[in-house]
Length: 498
Ligand code: MN
Image (cartoon, rainbow, N blue to C red):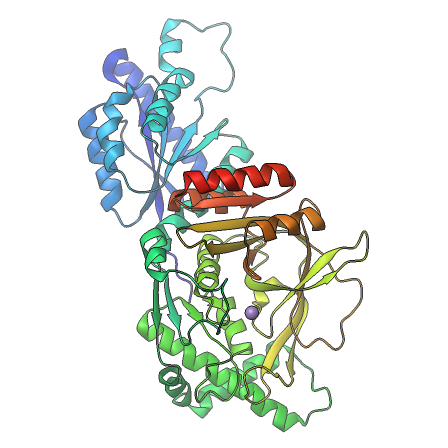
């Protein structure tokens, strides 16, 4: 299941003792008011915690180290209310290891024309102090997020909220453990990758288990547990027999219920949050896990097909980053399958043999049982649905041999023009930005895979910030993409990320 810790973000205000005690008292009062307002806004997914004003080398260093060591702290928000000489920040920043937000704001919104004197100017000089601070961050090449705006404005609060989700993704990345019950599909290149390098870069642990060890766990699930889950399925989803005998149909569905329960127990027992299967290595499993994997993804597990552990980890990461998001529209593994090349209606059918997460579904969800030529097992039960419309992002983490690259593509999800009565799989349908042709050319040129980790609930900026924090190259394909600039950017990336 998806359990994300009750993280907090520390709010650290910079100043110095040059301006007297009254000024420092005001600085503390103002920053407390900002923290209160942010917490009461209802916009932030995590709590902000006020910390005493940072005015000396010793306190700055101590505070950043305490942030490092506090497992509940997922990042520090910094703001210079007055001027804070940046050499005081060097030692603390050198030792700090968590996400950093530089919030460039000011306590007062408007210039107080009638009353402003030099005392006011000295007290309210973020315009001055934050430049000094940002300079040392840049000189030290410290990866951070910079947000400029007034702290009471909702758009600023929303940007802080988005950054918090990215920060939690950065902190939680090293807790992702992927269980592989099969190796990579024979001869396939793009799903391969360097697992040691992935652990060094992202903190992911990717381990293999013999499929029959998991299959034994599936076998041990009791009939009563299976029946209870089948009842839940029949309650929740539309049963589409398509001429099959109802009892025989139910037996096929029960196999997936048993797989769901057995796999989940195995994952929980061994502390894994993402899973990889492969139709070519099913051991004693009766069916390729279909409906079972769809349900596990909906519960927050990452999933990758055909041994694709990179997609499994990315789906899990996105599930973490979007957890608890109000009105979330869903996150899933998808696969580029088939095009519509009719002029003006160009798009890509996104699907997989079975394993698409129902969190992205719109409208009724059906259970169907149909033959599957891949996998050499009995007909698997699967959830079939159409997906929501609207903007989303598709990502592909590729291993370029000496390094990783993260492709992040803005896509517009649409309804398919006509029903697909013979297609027994869940689908999404989208047109990549800036248009089908440029977006697809860019994806191909950048080496993107056919499997993607997709979500409606994160922005390209958030995934890009995660990539920067991991020290890998993000490649954005969006409304601004043109092939000449993209090609130059990829060449520059080869130089920078070696
Ligand atoms: Mn596939």
